Length: 243
Length: 289
Image (cartoon, rainbow over all chains, first blue to last red; front, side, top):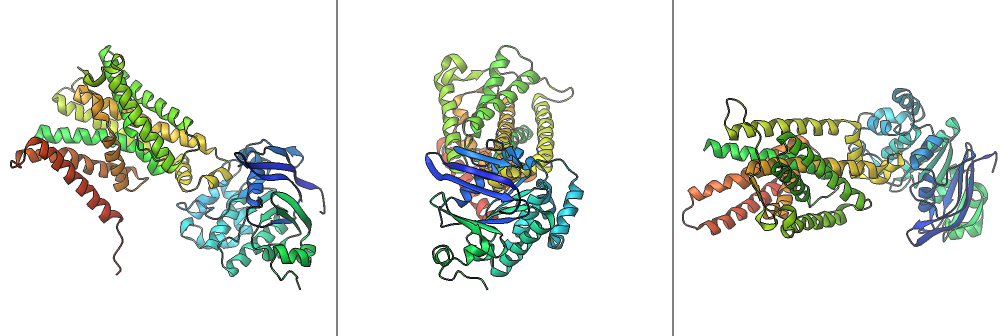
């Protein structure tokens, strides 16, 4: 990892009721970097993101954001501290317009709606094309951009994205990943990405964590993971190298 | 005949209050409540008991509304994680629980004999008792309607709609969904309590058998026909359901070949067929052009 960690999860334990999913997962994220979490179905990727976002109370471990202990903070307090979260699929307010969706993103933090909307439209210029449209009637890719825009309204320093390519066409997936790279490059936002589409995600990522059965398995730079034949075979399919 | 029409309008307004409440809970927020009659009964009995100790009409109505809302908040707080089918079962059970308490606890509310001699509001100068009551209930419904329209248009309305669509997304922008759901349930129950107060006052007599699950179903049908979430459509469809319910009583003057009991059953059958037809036309598959 290059630079100081702004998000740290240390030995996180979490689950649903008596069913424990995470058994001591740890990770770090530095400003401006994109980190992907991959792993087989049921390994705890989405649970990890929900726990970091505050939607799931951890049973053990510690989470720090910008040096602040947020382990037991509410989702609203985490948002105020700079942690944005975009849930998996169906993640827009379907009956609202795109403009209203973005307005909702500024609920928990103070700020001028117009100023923030203009700023988000600069980063995601395609939003202007369907600004007044009903979000639920947009394509999957457009909805994902709206969800990203809504999360950016609160000016996060860390963005948690749960499978942003789920259900998207290859073209839409490329566009969404392009936007994610842009957000990181231009705003210096650190992005933690959970993805099934591991190849595509690793292509825009700096580092990667691989989870298995709720535990850290392997971590390293995205390039080293992509070029690791063993990892490629197990987690990325038979083909695991980049040009 | 005029008195009969006034009576239908009064019932339409009373059920309109209850349906507006259900529209906040189910239509806007997606909280399925099959026991709206429980809060209606709580409001009616609260008003009736206060009336018996001589409490003025406005105070009785206010306390009945608040009591209905209080019961609604309690149900919402005891079922924080319940959604859809589970909440439907709990609310249905709760409504039967309330009805059985009213039926069996004679010391509390007269048991099966119910409560008689409930006061009506004072008549408005120049109008008869029925028309005065109609004016008061229409004004109350108009205020409740304006209130629910404001909720729909305000940020709280948008948030409630968003909770109906996906609670996780709402939580992700920092909103505490339980607080919103509790408020929605409380407001909806308060409106049902308000309707109950007018119901008790209008009939001057109430008993537990007036608060069966069929009341919840009629109100649910009205909200369903009106499409979830719109106060205007909810009121229009409530008027239609009230017309079908109360208007078909006139059949006894025209249908002479069946006795009273058979006619009552026939009336309910006709009502059921009419509701099925309306829903089929409104929500049925569109023909290809």
